[in-house]
Image (cartoon, rainbow, N blue to C red; front, side, top):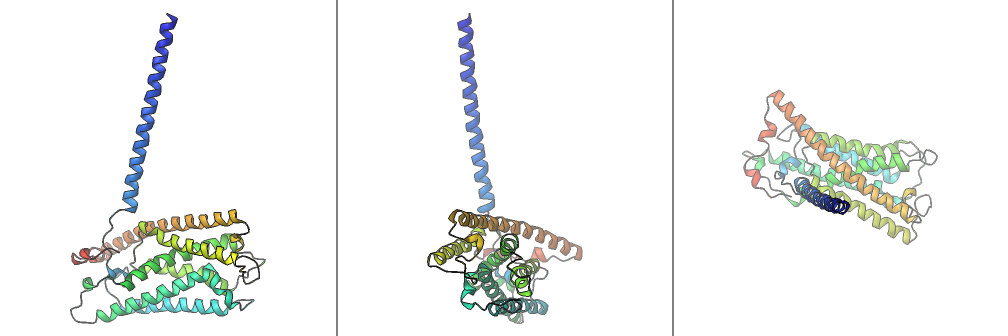
Length: 310
């Protein structure tokens, strides 16, 4: 009797183990399918075709008004002023005039990106402003050219980089015993983000989640540059054998973690910007409905849908 009961318990135990294994495999398969579907939804989702008109017109209008043309060139002049002040250290309480060290800092890389994208944006808007003066001009006939693609790439890259630089500098690099809270410091590490945030709110340029790797390219390039600069004996403008204290390759584990952290941060920020872009579109749509306009509905015509995706 006891032996029979023992056998039944063994059979029941085996049955339970098989059931648990089956359930685990099924759960794993479901999770795998769910992850694959999620990846397809977010990273391989077919977005509406990007038309070049969104790169040259404000979010609130379907044409280029004079105010927007002036605004674009004012943004360019602001970036140009920051670059000039950075090179010649105008606004610094203690200028060191280390011109040969200017290119080694990530902040200055961002300034070059910001200056370039603002210049391209100004030319694109000026071109569109001149074209719409022509009788019978239809903005839906615009074609996506190389300048448009480069501008889109630089704009997205500059927006994310500027904000990450601001966050990283004030949270990990700024030391009141070493750095001065002077006008130049504010221009380099606050105004850069302010310019891009204002631009983000006014322009029609879209953010797409699948383009997150654009920002990772810059992180990888700067990491490689900082390693090479350290290996050849490069020093910062104060004579220390590193560019930033947190990026000291004498401590490779710490420096590597910093680089990985920056890559994660800029990816999260890009995702956040995509989310904010959705919110911005909905807000403008609500405003258009209240004002009785159908801008967002008429912005893309049937002809525009045949334009190649970037």
